[in-house]
Amino acid sequence: MTPLQTPEFAFMGGRLIPWKDAVLHVSTEAINRGLNVYEGLKGYWRHDGAGFGVVAMRRHYDRLRRSAALLHIPCPVDFDTFRDSCRQLFRALLRRDRDMWLRATLYVVEGHWGEGTVADLVLTAYHQDPTPPKPIRVGVSTWRRSSDVSLPPRIKTSANYNVARLARIEGRPRGCSEMILLNQWDRVAEATGACLIMVRDGTVVTPPPSEGRLESITVQIVAALCQSLAIPYQERPIERTELLIADELALAGTLSELTPIEQLDHYRLPPQTPILNALSSRFWGAVRGVNPHPAIDLEPVDTHDLPGDVRPVIFPAP
Ligand code: PMP
Image 1 (cartoon, rainbow, N blue to C red):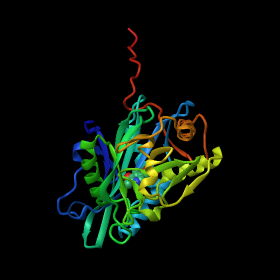
Image 2 (image 1 turned 135 degrees about the vertical axis):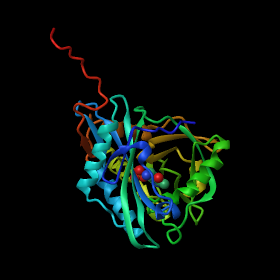
Image 3 (image 1 turned 135 degrees about the horizontal axis):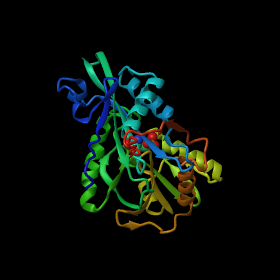
Image 4 (image 1 turned 180 degrees about the horizontal axis):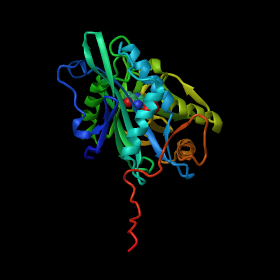
């Protein structure tokens, strides 16, 4: 088990605060009803010497606003404030040898049953191993993605992750680090924290959001990479048995990046993954800034004189 990181700072109430002070009152709807919406953003050190870049910040902000609107949570920040707040936390925690994942959450801190709702933007960020993800084993869960009329998967809210948690608990004794959730029609929705990408006969296939997956930014990126690499791309429903005859399978998500799946329950996938390899190397070239792609915009974070940098000791002249 990877221990949870406890970074030095969080961002709450419009400013950087010590990690231990980032607390919410038990009476808030954030606690009582688990009422929040959130985003996970990934920042990478560029390999072209241009510092640190955060992928698709504007698209994450827009999705945060859409999730908030669907739950009648007023968004307390405009994009510029959101960007400045993220930059402040990245700058406070950045280390030269680690990429970072930042969680941006709107917690409902005032109001009751949808009246007088007030949210606060809370940011936490964690160091990440800069190496691409290794192949993993996944299973198909007996738990199910909720439907658009129960708890819409389109809304990125913590409540949607209770079923995801159950699925991961189910998968752990089976040696699975991720699980695939089917939808109410017994077709593939997504994994617990990422979308699913399948390759069949040279075409990259993923279910559309109407099959119960998040409107994923990484899937948008994959579609654009496919287009530039002349790889056919299709959004259509996927049945469970198709997973067992897939040529290649992978997870796609901000944190998962493109994670190859080597085994699905008892089925071992073919070891060669030519299409995933092509997509992955294009993806990594773009996030590292050495082979830019228009679908992977990198929001810069100022990395001059980082607080954690070792500065040369200057001795006063004798
Ligand atoms: N589905 C779920 C349930 C997720 O938590 C995520 C991660 N945000 C994704 C899909 C992938 O979305 P994105 O590519 O925007 O990170």
